[in-house]
Length: 137
Image (cartoon, rainbow, N blue to C red; front, side, top):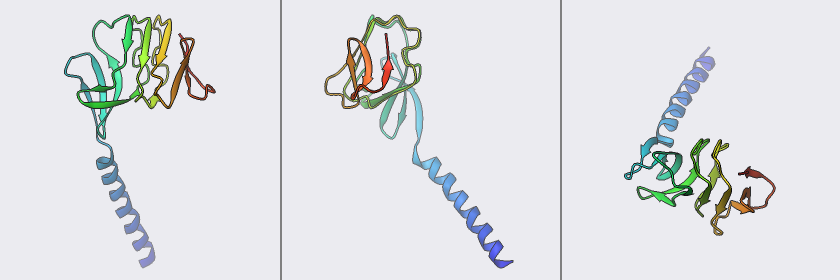
């Protein structure tokens, strides 16, 4: 009986610690940059681009940073239905979400040559090993 009670208390204590760890571990905050162009999620001092506000330029340049935070990710469908014909991805982007350029009239995708994760060949976005197709204009 005492053993079951002890196990139950241990499980309860573990559950409380897990909830506290999750609450403190990664604090995410949705934001819009000071210029009112970029929607992003801030987590652990890094920015995850989540969308673009306003009229985008034909040639979209994803920023290296927003509001002083490094941009490391482009979210799922972040640029969906935007009227952009090309996009340039900077060196700091380490993750690109699912179909970020859905329904865009893209003709070319460019990637900074210093990017260690992604590359573009003839306007098509691949991982650096060119084994995985990420986006095709």
